[in-house]
Length: 71
Image (cartoon, rainbow, N blue to C red; front, side):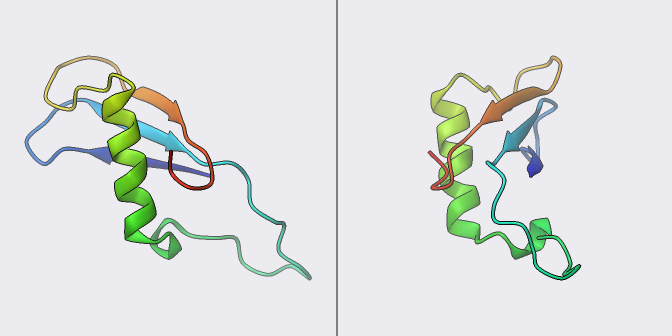
């Protein structure tokens, strides 16, 4: 699953790609981005910044693969 994030004042977007989770059983609904814990997203954003994403710069969106813990 991927979540697109952008700084409120920035122009450059980052797409945080999380590894696929367990498949839902019996046609259950897929996980929505609103179901992801905020702490996990915060860790993923910190990892994206550490990996070189500059949210206030201009340019194409950056895709960052993070692990299940957001690191």
